[in-house]
Length: 227
Image 1: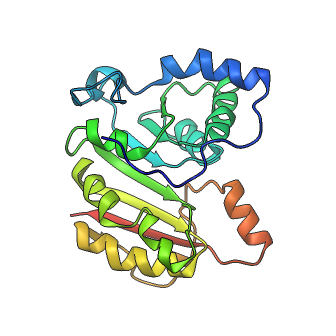
Image 2: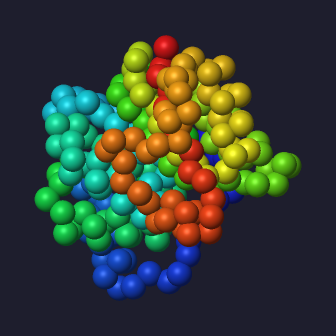
């Protein structure tokens, strides 16, 4: 199924080493056949076979991969699938993985909606949405991740009780998140202001957060649970 994709896919010209990593590493790091060209029947992925029965976490738009790699190294008992359509970000993560001993990461270099189509129902134990594209103009709010087009399939693939974390520095994104996410089968877990003002205990700051702090913006950390 062809969809519009509004974010950037390419940035600066890749260096030869980055191109080589994309060619050499992506095939073995794939979570399985995802795209319509390799899986036209949209057969669900066999996560049991791919990850040996480990719980599977999903990071939606991992940017440069700082947080994803931190979670992989901190939690070797789980497997992580990172989804990122921006090829320069994928190349950065692959470079980090080559310098790491982590062996529990899979990478989908594309739109997470493609992945949603082939992930089995209730197969993901935790999901992260960290500093997503804010699409600040009102007419572009429908492009944000926190819309039914994304939240419905996310809810389908998350296990009951799974945690969904959202970090952003955009107050209006917080508003839309708190309006939309609970409508799709999630409970917001905040009880006090500290619960959304303070980062999670295992948090690894990203380049986007560092930029936000440098420019004087306030990060928000929202935690939801799948009902």
